[in-house]
Image 1: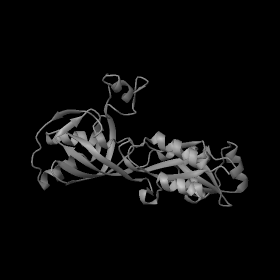
Image 2 (image 1 turned 90 degrees about the vertical axis):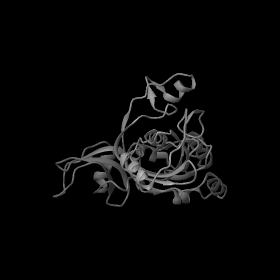
Image 3 (image 1 turned 30 degrees about the vertical axis):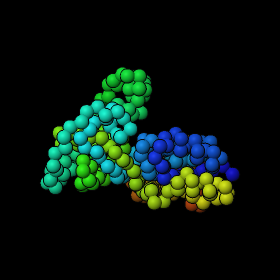
Image 4 (image 1 turned 45 degrees about the vertical axis):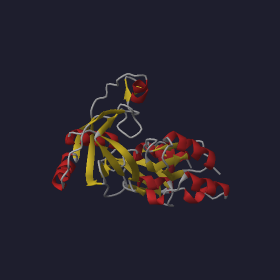
Length: 296
């Protein structure tokens, strides 16, 4: 039976997100798999995979906030802004007081203008930035607006800071480490990173690829597949009759019937039998517009 739903994977270091997807395809037998936000090869932690019909919902989950824990190495900048790149420059590391760390936290919280790393998947003139950088070019990466909701910095040893970040989509912790180093005046790069949460999902609920392989051998993979609508738990919901649900599935916009309704750009919709139908938009008048409907 084809698997449709969400699989939470605890990625180990050294694997690309593409590697994880390829392995998951082999172990689950489901060829149609996408993820809701890549992790660099060096990084570990939560990678949210959507299987089968749930891939239609990826676009609504990539906007989830993310939580990370990591280490920042002070005193050295690298070509990749992490520990895997060539060291470009080294500078002495000053003594950082607790007051200075709190000042840095305040300075890097809120809405920021952030330049992505040169070695990133951001497209520049139709090319991935990392492809340009690997050829020796300098990708002209523009700054982008990102949101850092919470930032915690603590000493973690000589020349090291531990970092905990709660951020919005599109935020590069590598860039954050680089920019914190520049603000201190000694340069820095990201030495380690682990994603601990994405939206409502937590890494504690994820399985490693080794655990997934064991489950696959026992024919128990289905036990760790979550329902597709769990990825939209933070959005509003509408309930319609079974007949109206079928009309939505066929692309028909439903006229309002409820006395009270709340507009929503993206709302889950269920039929009266409890079946999750997909994602809809509810306008000011209460009309329900189908956006991404799942097959029967």
